[in-house]
Image (cartoon, rainbow, N blue to C red; front, side, top):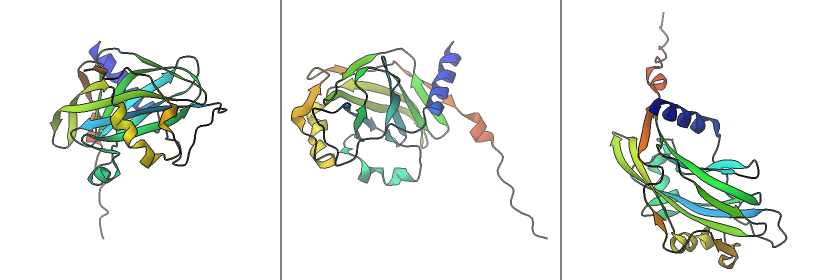
Length: 218
């Protein structure tokens, strides 16, 4: 059964293409808008990797994931400058969505050939309203184990970090007013270790790919 959980998690990481994009820097909300905004953050303590939180619509077909970091080893040397936060590093997510009911029910980490996912189910539901912005909290990944540069264990906490998160909002999205933000999580809320311990899957195929032979001069 454990193997099945690991395999499904890896497939989901591969199938959901690119991270859900943020709105443009000059985006502004209108009361007459037919869409709404989701605001939250993904942060991490530990080695640079792709830390992801997945969401899906319950009454619509929207789905995607938010990501802090990435799976590019070269980019890891420069991410500190591009991080929206400093301790921990991370990214503020401001995404335009179809109004409706949504659920966050999985997370994952991609670190080189290693893939991590949660071992226990969880559900965080939120609602997007037209012309409104909903703040859903912060997901904080803490690396618990690593081998060289590869993350092999993590835990995830879900907390209210409203004051910290909206502090960077004017710098990143100057046309968004904080008065338009609905707090979808209670002030001071904290839930530790959502999804339980992490499951590790190592993509052995990537490790075993034969090196390309150099041409032989004659």
